[in-house]
Image 1: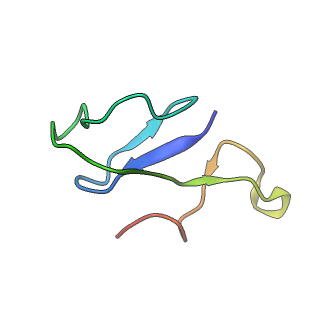
Image 2 (image 1 turned 90 degrees about the horizontal axis):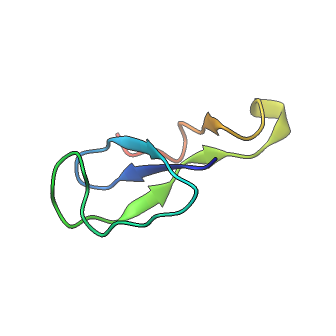
Image 3 (image 1 turned 90 degrees about the vertical axis):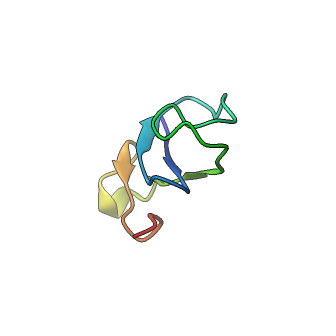
Length: 55
């Protein structure tokens, strides 16, 4: 299942698809960016790619 990160509070959620417009963690209207790593040399599906995450 893919991982999505809130662009406001940076909380990561595991969802099959983004189904909310407001973050359940910070309660703000946010954009959710997919941060799942699908490359097999990095462990395959289900691993979070740190290069895609906001810091």
